Length: 433
Image (cartoon, rainbow, N blue to C red; front, side, top):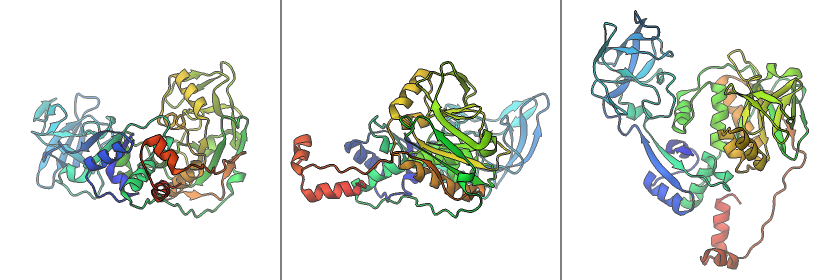
């Protein structure tokens, strides 16, 4: 799991170097596999620039000829990305810049001279997204060294199968706080609810509580879909995820932040506004969000509506009710699924996702509401949404807090470390026990 250091610092004070932090965490049992310095190799020849003119290249079906302003000069650049437009501020690799294994030089295509290259996130080493050019903030100063704008340190962790609590930035921050003696800062959303109660907008039937101990739904109305702010896009890219839209990005952001997978539906596309959790029937099929038709077996858990499946529980949603450009009302699902069942389903279908990887490790059912509330807060702030009152919470057997008794002698017997009672108490309190 990749964790940008600047994101981690939102939740805990960190004064030591990335290398010292990695060593401290690894020696405590949380293995840091690598440290990545995004922007370290960019040098001074990758800078911010603005597209001042854009026209189609004659003889090409996809190339554009652009004029870009660096603040001190005007250059001509040919670019094949479909997402750029006049006025965009973009990363410009000047002649002589090293982009991966490529040295940028002046070239000629279709009779046009190109004096550099506009860069995608993948070309910058910021993830695998190569679908378009990375668009910078509109207020970015022209000619700025890109490392100053987008440079980041990313820690890559190897999370063990029994540590589902570490599958989040906050989970990592909790360990850092405990090891360094610093306080932990967890977002505490305060929601202003208004409008029609959620209980009037969605009905839930859970036919398999053994495989779905808890499922919650909130409704957020009047959302406006659009791009995410650049700070969120940068964090998602550094964590290995491609930004898509503000609503989808918020669900991914909260999954990475809290460790709770979420799923956003277009409320208007849910037939009869009724969600049913049930086992699949033999041979039943669903087309998932990756546009693959999948055949299911009765031991697999589905999220459905009265007309059929809408998603494979804990693994991937279906295309039927997905958020789109016309969506104005979000139905937000936050659930807890049986870890073993998700693992078996994911393996049988050959379908591993960020969500299934977290459910497979076992998640705290209390995370469902915490993650849902955080996502609602962000949908208000970043998409102009209004949170409808209340939560539909199907939680038939709430998990009760457990008391575990042990003596300090047992700690020494298990670990060969002699500890005092105060040391044990302080360590457990630091980890929120």
